[in-house]
Image: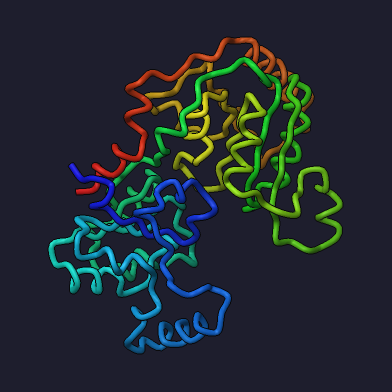
Length: 318
């Protein structure tokens, strides 16, 4: 079994999530700010495959000699990292881990030199690209026991990723089911018509993870909407388990997980591109939401908390 100090995590922007919690072992890929002249120099060297790129990599290099494994998260990977790590510490195992689905622009799995050391948390990607599977995880000591406060409040914060029309239509249905919804979506789209049409759910700025957690503490229900083609569990699922919140999701595969409990998780029915125009459908969903909210939350048992925490996740890499 590895201790924390035996493992290094390389993640693109650790400050956006819970990773500062692991501040001794998690690092940004770079040792220079991404918006700086030095970074531009790095990108030039990287694009043209000029040696010395490693000079610009982050503080994780100083910990390599004692590391037993390095897990590089998808967007944190830079070509050549695994080769560099192996030169410094030949006995160190290096893994590439995808916790996002692979898009047409994503090529890291093609650049990584050890196909047998690539893992993903998306079952579809594992089947399609012959990756190994590993679950998503959450820090155990973030756990908060259930409280009956704020049972009728729902919170969602996420990027657009083509989900805005669906989320906008869904908000009205959820509110008809008795929920007070705070749905905040960050988008890169600038056109006025789009922003006006969905102004009630579009947000100007994101939140730090501590501020995001404070929002979650003041709600009883989390919303989880997978993007098209995504089968993987999202961080919101983990947050609902470890922060003891009910969950509303469109992830059809969630019923196949060992933590699924219909008293805690409501699975949204499939609709055509988020079309909630059918009065009969919206009334049915709203009625089911009301019934779902009335059922008591059932705290997740210790074996579930142990199965999806950081320590268990770390041991799955082989």
